[in-house]
Image 1 (tube, rainbow, N blue to C red):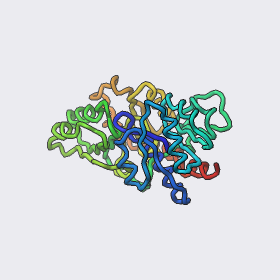
Image 2 (image 1 turned 90 degrees about the vertical axis):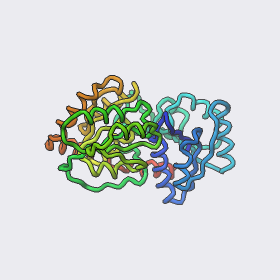
Image 3 (image 1 turned 180 degrees about the vertical axis):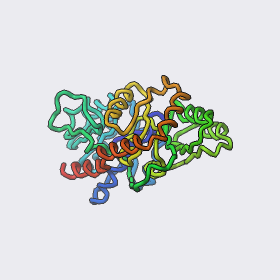
Image 4 (image 1 turned 45 degrees about the vertical axis):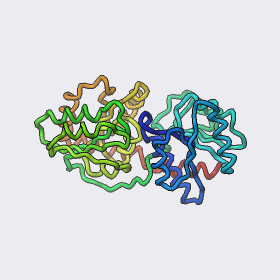
Length: 319
């Protein structure tokens, strides 16, 4: 697997590749990871996979080919949106390539998988698979059925939350006099924990949870969620958790608006265009609407069955 994550990219790409590798391991297939950011090395190694670190500025393709040759590797999975990965393909020999989440280089691959609900491509090549069947969730996802009468709100700003959206929402929740319970998942690369704790002080309405990689476990304790667009939004659908979703990039604005059409989430805007006080008031009001919450919960379960990683691993085995 050639994949990256960290403070800028978060852990979505890493988590779904670990999920695929986990299914392959059950089939006695050995996987290893090639990364360029050592901040994710411990996470990958903690799952008992070998990790190689490379540089990306000079001869990335040559470095990868050498590793693949040394390890007698037959398939390379690349999970990256980077345009610069084009130069990798020129160096690869005697290797089958699966590309995830990037439609720019389909012609170079044996198989390209776009883990989205719908593709914007007008022409669908034969080596392209896309749609809800191929949404890849994180590893070790387990679902417990819950009741929507629990009035607890889940929040996740992602692994790094580089724009500190978490603090903006916590501030807005703190200002309101409404009674609520907010469960805040703090990501691995979040840098503002001490300041966040000083803001919350003794407000018992807000709980911080650290180091939780399986967010579905937390979602099962909640009746409504607020998340940034990414793998977490699809995990919420699988868990049957209605969510308010926001974007942290222009690209994600398009994607977040698309999934909002499917009924399990409501789009509330791009992070730098949101009135957070107004958003929180709307969310708290909506949290009391049990009829709509149930409708949204059922809509999410309809689209995401959580078997995407298993399907992709089976395709790898066929190759």
